[in-house]
Length: 258
Image 1 (cartoon, helix red, strand yellow):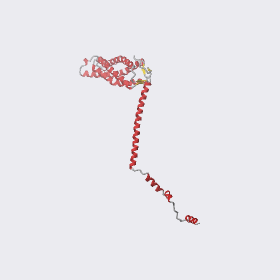
Image 2 (cartoon, rainbow, N blue to C red):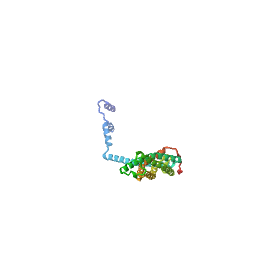
Image 3 (cartoon, one colour):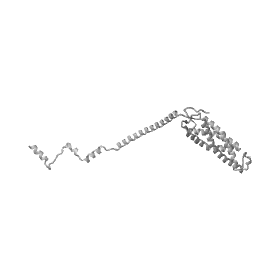
Image 4 (spheres, rainbow, N blue to C red):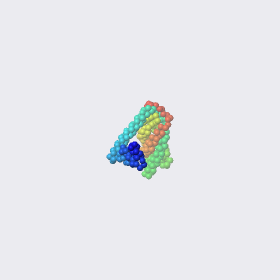
């Protein structure tokens, strides 16, 4: 009976209600809970520096791996090129192709030689007229048209002598596989051919031009101007022939030579 009365008194309105101590913590306001969590997760400068140091170390490690991977890719590409070169069939030129190449080049180069011959012969004429030594120049004509026969003779002699020389040079180069693949001749091979040919052609032009004009100096000037213009032009000409498949014999053996 007394226990029932006590329970009714506690349940009555306005009666004080005592919360058990074990549940007081769970009933704290949310702001207090957040403040406690922030206090527990607080980052000190030492911790922040340690995190940054760890992250920087990870970045350095990844950069080293990236460098090694790039080096591996470059080495792989080189190995792939070597394998492709070894497996790709090289080509050799037929005799007809070498003949047409030599003829086509002589037509192109002859025009440049004609222009340079006309120019330097004209300068020679002016210089000797000023010095009143015109009579000392063999095969000299006084008019502007007088240069034409000399220039034509130089170009004709160049055409006859150098066409044969270039043809045999192409046949000899046909025996060399360096810089030659199934797609054509490399740029370095064309440059090497142009330099070797220029050395031979310079002597040829200087001697022939000097003999026709009667002046070694003018002959050397004509040969020098030819070397300046024709060296780069011949590289372009040789590379252009890579686009022409006519006269190629694709095979992985040495050329047949002459």
